[in-house]
Length: 142
Image (cartoon, rainbow, N blue to C red; front, side, top):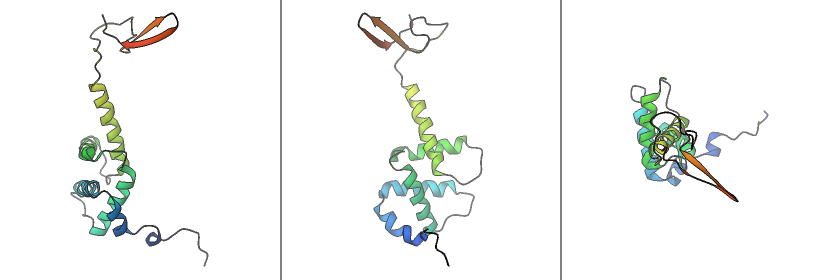
């Protein structure tokens, strides 16, 4: 019988060993999110939950801060139309959207309330050209 060089699951990853090397608080938050996302479905067994935590952890750890995981879960649940199981990439996408919205909300530039600003072309950044160099500063739209 030919072997296609693929390792069996037990050879590549031991669930209990892998879970023990994870950040316990991050893994616990993921387990809570996975459990919440499965309400109304058949809940995972303990082993299935550990496996799901490992999969989510691999994708999310280092990409989504622990203290924002639940914010991402809420964002996904409030904005999704599908009834499929929650996927880790949905939480990554939610984090990217949350970051972008917060970055926009926290900009210190004055928002243009009417018309067109010739100093910045409505970009919020005024370009200052002087002999020998070019600089930029936030535009005050005056």
